[in-house]
Length: 523
Image (tube, rainbow, N blue to C red; front, side, top):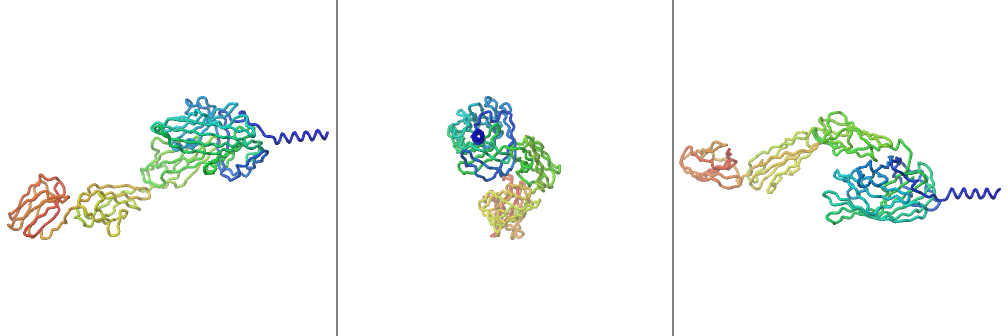
């Protein structure tokens, strides 16, 4: 009897500690919905051996979500992956270099009793559903999975991208079942095997047959148990940096894990009335729907967006502080986030300015005075052309009221960009400053000459105080003499100006060593 009990005990212990074998029947099927939690805990995930106990019971849970296995008919990529068993939503990182411009990224799997392989990936780029169909398929698991089993596979796929060329993914996977025993997580304790897969890949953007390769290398550690469908634990490590990029474990619903799952940002939190602000969903996982609430209700949604858009565009119509709340629903739960007084709408700045002299001579000082409303906090002046423009008396292009000398004659445009808490606006005054090659000197004007009207049209009257001859010159803003007349009669003398271009001139009258210079405007 003792011998029989001893044999029975040996058999029980052998059964309890012998390794398990994982088959396709232990893995997920299409339309399965499995819950997982994520973590950022630091722990020893590399150790492996026979009859080994991986104790991850102290794993800290950060977030939860649902992993759903979609039929190809439920995705936009049925034409490319109609023979796949299921598709799994992925982050845009699965597409390597073009991930930031992609949406609706899926990895498509073919599951048979022999193996689980990746057939390729689908993504929506430039509103087009594209598929990177692998001609060489990536073998993830080869059944049965038992301790010591090793295998390798290569994968290769390419998709044409309108206006961009093509996106190509290639690489190889080396897999080994490197341990067996038991694993303990906050979800429970399970007999398991551990699989280590090393993936060395290259993602390439191809232009005209020339590829720009971007290495993509990682190690995947996976713990599998019988009849659990989803891996008990998955750890993904960047092979180049040794940084952990993902920790997932199968789990039950934990209400506390949905804290801070919902999140969002705005491209601007300070703006003026009439400005458009984009609210960007930043929620963890894959929410199924969105609901935005903004208070007070002095706004409209723009560009076809609405309160249920993932990333709505909003125009605020009144000055004030606005609170924004986002609520999201997942397959496995819900969460919301409220940001109080998040958007601050202020009076927009209205830039304006004046100059002390619109028609200075070369090197004559011009004072610019800021007349902007809306409490600007910074200023940026741009004067073009900028050759010969000098800021003086300690002022600069960013002074509120700069002082400027123009050392080259000509026409100058002046622009001011004023900024306040709501943003910035710009005003441009074209051909605002006319710089003359000579100064204006009205000394002795009463003594020997006068001219009128000013502004004038087609006829200029010059009045001399004596009978002596006088020379009358008209000079344009480039310093060119465009008219020269000699007059001799005391009193009024008429000079025709109808053949001159309309604009600003210098009139110069000389008589017996005396000179009068002044500005003349022809309209």
